[in-house]
Length: 111
Image 1: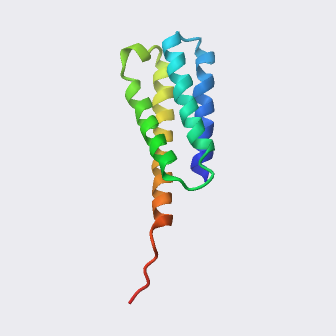
Image 2: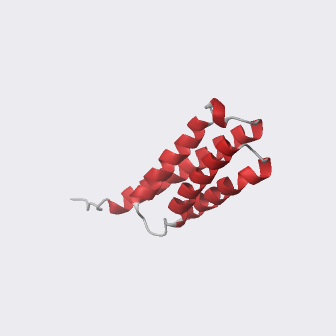
Image 3: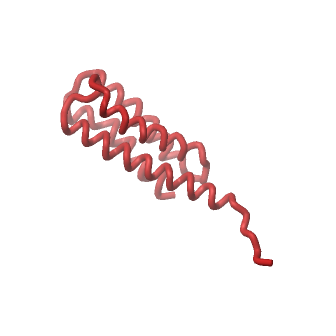
């Protein structure tokens, strides 16, 4: 599933971005943990399992919401990085959940 690869790469990206910004520990720990969760969900989405997609949606939305928390909002680059990464992770999660639900839905034959 392409959603798994996208979320896996986003997780790795979130994990390494604090090293680029040399940011305080609060932001660094936030992105380390969120990056690990998204990366785990992404790289484990090899099969169609709905819970990874739901977790990706939740964590992606958390990334978007957390950009407005003053403690985690340090630099404009961090703001845009987390907004864009969160939006892409949430969209990939929604797509994975939709794909999972559509594969489980039985095909009805016309009468």
